[in-house]
Image 1 (tube, rainbow, N blue to C red):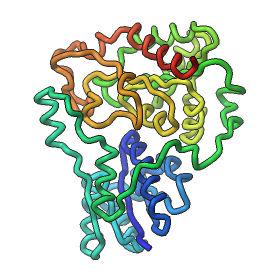
Image 2: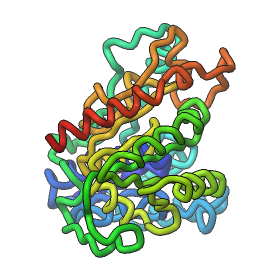
Image 3: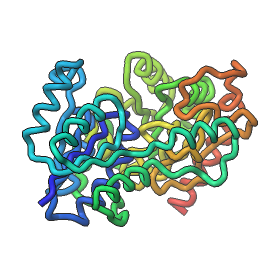
Length: 345
């Protein structure tokens, strides 16, 4: 029996993209055991995937903080009998862990993030063919370790039954069309202008038999979302009412999700909900598009300066963020309407 340590500590969206891969690999090799090292907050993504998958929590603010915490983690990992290490992150922490595991004779494989290819695409603006998807890069690591597997994952709720009663904090029953909106991202280059997004929320809330659920986190996001939820009818603020498990459950009942290039696109993908995604500084061709999402639902403005960043973290050289400003509210709503028509003809 092999014991495989799988390392992907952050970020949220990247961790979510690991779910279909580790689920498919573990299903192909039921005699082996797979431990996912990730942040404690992300553990619910993996807890019900299969009997041979468990989580090794990484406590970034507590026991595993700093150099001392890292070596405390290395010491613990070295006692757990791992035979293989799949480094799906390739950052300083994972490099230290795999260094000591390799010294101990463990087999190690490392993700190729394709940094050079991505930088070349950013520079050249040649977007076709798209680069290898992040999930394929995850699969490549398992291939190197000797665990090739077909993609068999479909829905995270294939492994645990849904229980609607857990959503009583936000809904008593499913009536009409439900649309989720996650209007934020970590970086400005990926956030649709809030005045435009507010108008999208307003117009969707006025549609007959429609409920809009707003998703976000943090103080500033909470202020904006609370204001919109109080201002417009049929709009529900989900912040502070759901843990990750229940948030996934709610998303699974949506008819469509509107998201930036951010984690909620990937969460919705895990429960087979169609996503209308808005792209600014980044681009789907860089390899971060939602799992099995229709590329037609990526709303974008064609500018010669796009994409300008892999992660959307660089300041806009034009200053005006035209890549996002030139996406009209009509473009977004029309795409949502098409998704809803296709799902509920």
